[in-house]
Length: 187
Ligand SMILES: Cc1cc2nc3c(=O)[nH]c(=O)nc-3n(C[C@H](O)[C@H](O)[C@H](O)COP(=O)(O)O)c2cc1C
Image (cartoon, protein in one colour):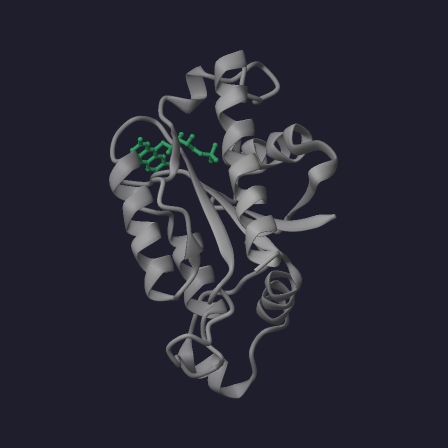
C-alpha cells in the first residue's frame, strides 16, 4: 500500500486542516494510507542547536518523510502567508545538515498542497509554499494547490467537509497524488 505522510500546518487540536487530512485518508480507501505527522513536538529552528545535535523530533519527522511515498500538506493562511510552524518545520527538515542542492529530504518526493483558509491570500500562500518546495526539488503537480476558502463555513459540527461536491474535489485531488506516486514508481 502507498504510504503518505500528512502534515497539518496548524497546531490547533481541532484544526480543520488536520481534519482535511483525516478525511483524505478515508476518501482514498485502500489505495493509500495517510499518516498524520503533527508539528507540535518540533522546537524552533536554531542553527546553534542543529550544530550540536539535530533534535529527536526533527530526526523522527525526517525519517517518516524519507520512508513515505509522498507528502500531503494542508495548511491554513495566517496573515496572507503560511503559518510559522510549517516554515519552521521546512527549515529543520531540509538541512542534511548542510543545504546541498538536490539532497533535501523533499527532493524527488511527490507532494500535494491543500490550503484551508478563511478567504484572504489562499492562492498567494499556496503559490508561496509551492515556490519553496520547488527550490527544494520536490516533485510537484502542475496543478495549483487545492483551495478551500471560507473553510469554517464548509464543514459540519464535527469539522469535516459538509458539501458532497467538496468531498468529491478532495477525493479527486488525493487520487491524483496517488496516481503520480504510482507513475513515479513504475518509472
Ligand atoms: C493568526 C491568524 C491569521 C489568519 N490570517 C488569515 C488570512 O490572512 N487569510 C485567511 O483567509 N484566513 C486567515 N486566518 C483564518 C484561518 O486561515 C482559518 O480559520 C483556517 O481555517 C484555520 O485553520 P485550522 O482550523 O487548521 O487551524 C487566520 C487565522 C489566524 C489564527
